[in-house]
Image (cartoon, rainbow, N blue to C red):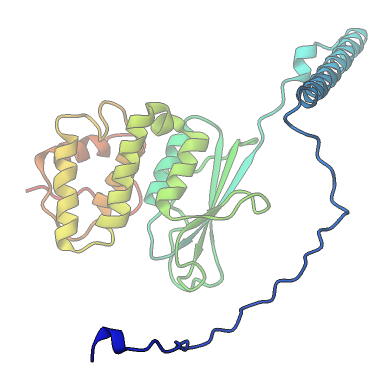
Length: 305
């Protein structure tokens, strides 16, 4: 059979596809809002005029407010002169009292808190007290603030209240300053940062951004690695800490800081008998004679080999 003898046959489709939808005539809404053409210069000129008018109104309101404040200032000056009162006295407000409540489980040591309170009491009038929660049945350190930390001031600027609680009522140490304005600050590292920022920034933020970052690094290593890590991790922290101190007088250099308070308390409370380097031993001896770190509750200077 040749190609010439093949007769063409009509082709049938393989399958038939139904239309997905039917196109109907769409009626556009006639209630659309009109927009001004943005291509015409008249539109931009009108827009600039409106902005200029708004700025003029704001400037006028500002001038009116300044004029009213000036009138009030003049009125206060006249009243002060007539009453014989120095206007500067009206601006002297007594410092507000900050009341800090800290809940601590009986299994944790408040040595860092006691050291910070001792340092703050040398700067501002401070009152510190301890209470025992009803959930605590055994012994707790109700006298941890005694011995130079507890002050009896008629008008203290800072009141620190430590409340001992059981593990079930308080699994982690937390601090509350203002129940209406903030949530509790949890963890001794965060509490120490907060207290230093608010009351003794010379131990933390005033040392500069780079030094503050170094202090944060040591706080994280001791609280999140040394206290919860295994023996190998704890030894690694001690080794790096010994190298970090070097020949410095303190942890971050020549300035006593929050890093010294935290690391001193944690190392002196450690019972694993880790081998301490010569730099750490020298630094511990210096810390034991510092007014902030000497004779802290639960902190015993390790025996050096």
